[in-house]
Image 1 (tube, rainbow, N blue to C red):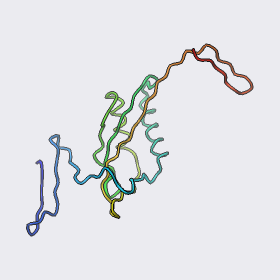
Image 2 (image 1 turned 60 degrees about the vertical axis):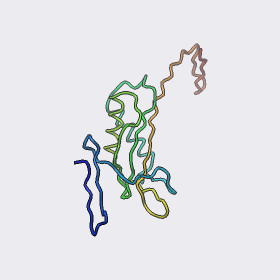
Image 3 (image 1 turned 90 degrees about the horizontal axis):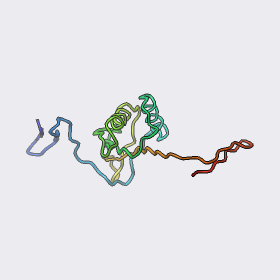
Length: 150
């Protein structure tokens, strides 16, 4: 199936579509709204969940570098759908990001456009920063750490 449309009195009352992969296609998505969606548990909770997922995987992230961009749609009922990697780093890290998004517990306050709750596409970046320093001098004095970088 690629599409199912339901009509009543010659007017379409619903339409469902699927991508070639069989994944549902989400229609009527807005990219610019009057009020952005809001994660009700708070972004601190969201960030902790992401960090916990990556830490539990026990991957060596010390040299990971780059940004994973996770795209998703906040539906008008406050759920997330259509979660996918828009731009990734590598399969293991990308899959962990997807796992984190699929397992987060909590709802969103939907986006608002013209006074109505609407579906809104979001991009969430996960940044990995690797910096190696070659220290010429490191010293702890009076509770302060002093260093010189090459």
